[in-house]
Length: 449
Image (cartoon, rainbow, N blue to C red; front, top):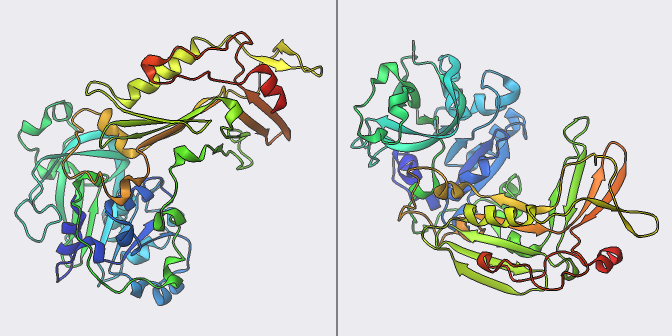
């Protein structure tokens, strides 16, 4: 959804998104910080603050924080808005009368609950699945779908929905979709629209309050790049409350260039949180890191000795393909697991290790990587390829050739390394994959480390 349209529609005057002071209430959901990508510059994101739904008491929030903001976004989240512990202060926020509110997923369901609708299990669980969304607001100046064609394709992540039966009179269905298999096929956008009254609710709006909800993720590439406008900025006493990383408000080096990684599993007691892993890529590790940009299909490789190479992938190639080839190459060449004995010699492992981590690629695939993996997801001209949102790579990985592994239960430390045979003194044959280095430790270097 073009967020500038959404927010300007629920205010008497039309404002540019970058001039609005926005509060995002995080319901402990990983998508919350993706919402920040809807702002197109470092300057405009300074007017955005993220707080947790239980960070402040309602009294402190209402008296000391609320008045600074022009609008509020209630994020997705796990659980149900019917549970106070899942929704926090969001329930009270939805009782306000004079501030525009957008609820996304859990926030959307919370709007339903607040005004008397029922929340029920969805007919099918939708986790990262695209659906055609129908609406009647393309030409409605009061609709958040103004100028958006109907239907359009959106990605859904939810297992609960607002019940279409006995919807409270103060709420109006503004977007909907069908759960019919025929409507979810590869070419659903040419089908006859399903009946609104018999469909799954994808968006509602309040008839007398500036409150809107959507049951899908607003996508970053729907957002125009806007010119910044001057408006009173938030004081440090308010911006300092934000749960957004400090780096959101100031430039930072690319993750792929720092060469450090940490997979933390320290929450106890939890049988799935036994081990934490960390590592880096010192020169002797003969490692490399990668970063990738969807916007121009550019793959960058930084070696542990500081050397940098870059290339543009072919039109028929994706970063997913490249990663698969790299991983397959090394999986085929792993000779086996060995352990250092007290004499400093390697011997075969006789018993199964208590952890499954085997080094290799560590990093992240950004949300926008679905453009190379999901049908019908194409790079729009509105994708903010030069904006603040894209200063971090769409995907970044380090090829971990070393790791320190900590066992939180037995309080035991392991060190692991990818050690190449002593007679391997020529570059690994990865020219087709753009890696032209000897990868991994020599035996002596590993012992030294």
